[in-house]
Image (spheres, rainbow, N blue to C red):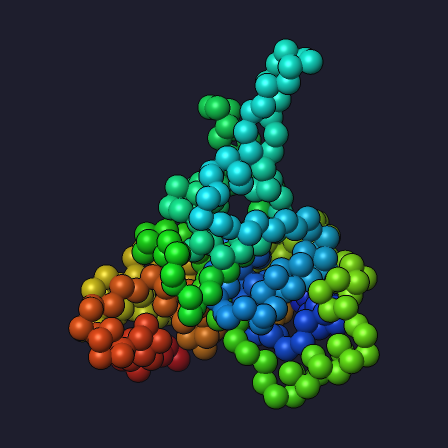
Length: 320
């Protein structure tokens, strides 16, 4: 190991402190984003416009010494617009590969539900395979390639909702809510002081972790220990979603793997080399809620995935 778990946790404390210079509040969202990155997954950020989703990704990239790019998805966007293509160079008489914005480390896929399924599929293939294929030639992506895709939860006209099978590719579904009253006051005070929260402040953020530190952090995630009893608890949480009367399709085996990895990452970024049942309960909602397909009659009755998971918590006995 290139660093101790304590040193890793201290670095992440510095990351959180730096991000707070640009982003007011959202401490839990930042921790979920860090868990996504160190578990090697991707996340959906859902929230109404203006809640800081873009700022969160830019600030995270700045404090982790990672390159960040943004794609604003639109209904007319083609797969080659994000993957790149081979362009014939007349003066050279050869084809040259022009790489698209997928070739980065942190990618903000803004309003992923705005673009047609074919382009969504190109992004999801890169997420799953960590590579892009152009004219039969495979181009590997960065080992740190992480997608944070955003969705607007209240606007559906002219959108292409992600199918259930494609939502399953995202490790976490993170809810980016409104700031509380004190946080909103602080936002206004910063603007009153003339702080450009979306520009200069992000550029001035200090890098608190480098590539070596990220690799070490991912190694710590793999080394986080879960007892057999706790693994059985995770398995029961996942299987109970399949038996719930409000659910048409419950969480599959990939969900169990995602729950374990996300929970191990959550423990590691908080300086622990072991997981607890409370960690699984904490991560179950962002890991599982987008993987459940509810029965139509349940949705008519107003039952949500969060309601189902609360029932699951109550039914599954917590190991001691």
